[in-house]
Image (cartoon, rainbow, N blue to C red; front, side, top):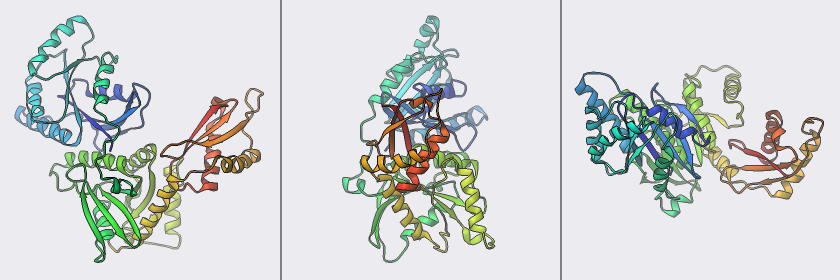
Length: 437
């Protein structure tokens, strides 16, 4: 389970600046995808070898003062419930305000660690003025300037100290099973799919409560297949407020992704693939998860001879460059091809675990390199001497050569395609590294 940190604070204290700073700090940003709504973003930060999710809770709805406080309380509660730690950002330039007080009051009720962080402390005078924030009674206090990055190192050190090597308290037995997350936008049929899969009368199903109240882990053991399904759809009842609902969906999907080995990404057949679907897809791929695309509600689409073929071609065009993904046309409602979806997910799970021996790699890919040499650079031929698979969760390969930085994307893509064709990595992101021999 990944560790999640939420940045909260009243408007204009510099939350987004800090958010960007945390993600770009070590240029180790995994992804930074615009949230479902305009102001909310999430990304993955890396500090001293530890990674964690960061949520920027964005601007609040403007209304009367009371309304404002209500919105703040609601946003903070959403963040507090979902995150393992909170950065409470205040602004030294403006000083302490009633809204800061109101937010502090909400945060004091939480058992989660809160890091009171005073932003815009960019000179000694500001540092003196900033000491008024000690009156909030929160320790420790961090003084930073998010724009320049000053002081953010100490804050990151304090956050990463909380991150243990294992953030999942799942029992070991369940931890060893394949985990499939059903992800996708609201109303694509995630709940229907889960119900269709586990709703058979002969199923043996047990609900293992997830890390948060609404993420249900369902232990599936049937037809000689055993795995854990992580459902991210249980969110709809959570709140009547459309925006909070969207916010929750996004965080839930990320959390489910972190835990999963393979993501079943549901699309609505009638709507096709949207920008938000592509964001979810690229996040799953950057996190190195196996992916199976499920085009749901296929029963509602008017079909001609080649409808599915044309649809799949269009989809793959949108997914490029990573288009080697299984695409299945299903109907959760009519239970069409839903067990085929599980079989495919299990195949992708096996592919993701695949280890190719060094001798076989060098033999097979060596021939592919012989057949199509890397381009000559500055009059020097690039020679790839040796290939080996790295001991990582996501299949990663190191190619040792004389000019690693001169190998361009087209040739990298050629090598990736060869690895995919020869060793069947369909649905699995592959990492390729060129290293000096």
